[in-house]
Length: 326
Image 1 (cartoon, one colour):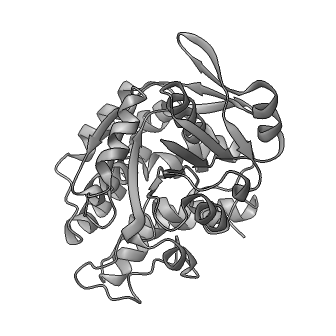
Image 2: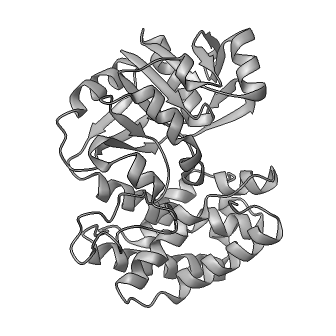
């Protein structure tokens, strides 16, 4: 299968390397130091077994790479609008687009009860409506990523733990899903198809929409957040509000916040992706992780004081450090 990657960062780079190892023809849009490194040394993947190099086609111009059989988008939500032209060039008129992104996607409330065309557009993730116009939900497959990776230097991806992806069609119609599932499984990834990708998206969001912004605010790793009784209690209140919102939109959460925190504690001391972004002075992904949850709650006339406080404090911190999307 010809597979194009938009977003050759940690997750995108990891998937590109694994797919190339499985014999797929992998191309990627890359720029700057990453593009130079991949062209000179190949895309390098560091695992517990050692370092491997993977020869993939890379270009800053998506049109040079040609139309693909599958396009994987591994960007942060605020980067997607600027990448639409690249996605379009790679996907052509027919290729499915698989998003491997965190948070609430732009299509999440489309065709949901109580939401019309106007209220379903989430300003937090698609403020101009350009993503919805350029990437219709019917063409989109979504992957909920349960693995950890980091970029140790340009063109070098370090795998932490996990290989699990939950995948499903944004529209709920999984007709184009099976070839994608088989391609990903051939790359020795743990793939779980689902008919309800919205539920999987909301469940992961519910689990990480507190730790990410709280770590960005406090500069503390996960174990320190969990060890502070007041901060721990605040996170649980946010999670209860988010679970209530999920119940209203058909994404109920059966697990307790305490049980989810216990799972996080098992991971030990680690820096969340948002904390790493703050430390590196990169724009943080706040809209899709927290802003969209509050926006949905507002449209349902739900009161969410703890989510409001988390969003307001984190947004102000990010604004002061120039870490919000422009």
